[in-house]
Image (tube, rainbow, N blue to C red; front, side, top):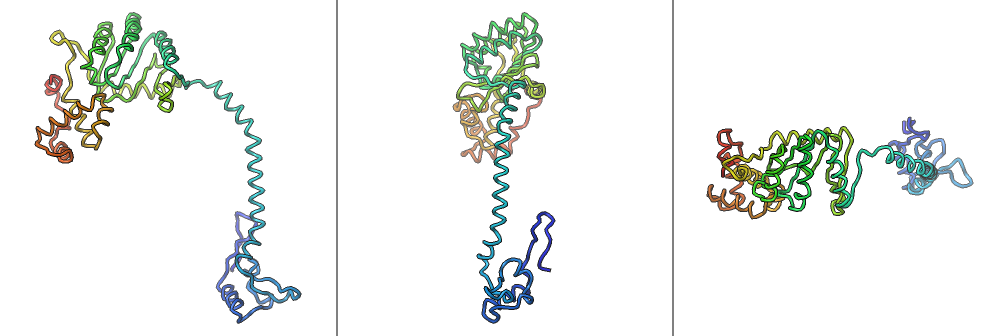
Amino acid sequence: MCIKGDLHDTLEHVEVCATGLDYYRRALTGNREAGEAGEAPECLVALGLLRPVAGDPGVLTPVPPDVAAAALARPVERAIQERQQALTALHASLAGVANVYREAQRQRDDSIRLITGKDAISAALEKAVRSCREELLTAQPGGGRAAELLAEALPRDLALGERGVRQRTLYQHTVRTHGPTLAYIEQVSAAGAELRTLNEVFDRMIVCDRKIAFIPDHQHERDGAALAVSHPGIIRFLVTTFEHAWGRAEPVVYEPTHQRPQLLTNETRRAVLSLMVSGYTDDAIAGRLGISSRTVATHIKKTAETLGSRSRAQLAYLVARSGLLEELPDDDRAHARAD
């Protein structure tokens, strides 16, 4: 058969069969300019490739395929246009309702709020931190903090300690050499706060009593924007991320024999080399670890001198084979911190 029913449409799906092709070819070449209507294959007639001769409906003549296609397409195009118009009308009818719905959702669900402007962010943070009664979790990437920010935070954080609020803060290892941050850490540690450092901290974050969190809004970063989040599921995710990082971090401890916490030079160098082997540039490594590009270059240079490397590519190969990227045994960690 050359005509098949289509279950998905009321129109029939028509295929030109071999007999129809041969009949159409002979009609075009003049071997059979016209034929009796009863002899013509049904597929050619259905597709409009054969039409009755004017004045003699019993005789059929071939029609160019583009002409036949245009005639067949017109009703289909009309149907598509009608559907498109109906769809446009439907969207227009629901547009007003959608606006009302979105506005109602915004008024009902304020679990994520955008705060723009440094003053507005500071005010919101101040209010949330002052209301803390049990726990304050903070992640501070990027190395040492500005002296004016530390001066603003110190009395507030000391007051939290006096109220018995447990404070835990994650910094990057680089704060161990930053005087203003170390002075702040020494004072809040004496008041009971716990502080640890990592090579990389996931992002800036403050969580108060596991009820509200403040995180950066990178989409509006240029405008100085933050997100205040109170959705329980998101809070749980942020706290879990913090706890995983906290478990891997090194405590910042002031010992009687040290005026400053011990450095973690070997650990930082291992992080630099790991990122270098992965193909990061010096600037990219510096940005991730919160150190200067010069410090990155120094770590790489000293390792190259130790391994006798003459190029970065050779150094990456030698480092990968040397075992320098493996974790140090527990009894060696004290030596690494003292470097």
